[in-house]
Length: 167
Ligand code: AR6
Image: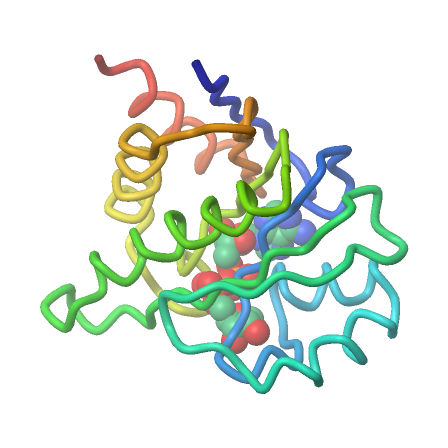
């Protein structure tokens, strides 16, 4: 069984095999967690990202982790919240599923996720966390043994913990 953890912290500091980036479709960096990951990984990350030609919403791409402790960065593009009737729940679930599929393909055993789309992209936290937890619970894991939700603040962490406490 996969272990699901929650932690308050900075995703760039996680000692896991892969961290997930809440990127945008250009994959060329931005603010929030994306900016923090690029700063911590160093300029080589952007050089590799430039070779990828972007990424559509809901999909994921993998790069090296460069100066990060993590071997890989999995870049996924969450949906911009439009009110919930424009396919956002399915796209957000796809972010988690496609990231995990890439992780499995690269023999990743531990992976850390930020709360994708809940910052600049405006996805309501409880709804986004519900989708994240459901996507992890329904995924058919093989190599991955640990999934960590890295929350930037205590409030976010409490939302995940309440969802994970439910059967
Ligand atoms: N570690 C963990 N979580 C973090 C960190 C960090 N270092 N920094 C921020 N968060 P956001 P989005 C949390 O806005 O909503 C970028 O410009 C943050 O508190 O980073 O998917 C991209 O280039 C929030 O809970 O991502 C895109 O253009 C969560 O991470 C756009 O933002 C996600 O917030 C993507 O927006």
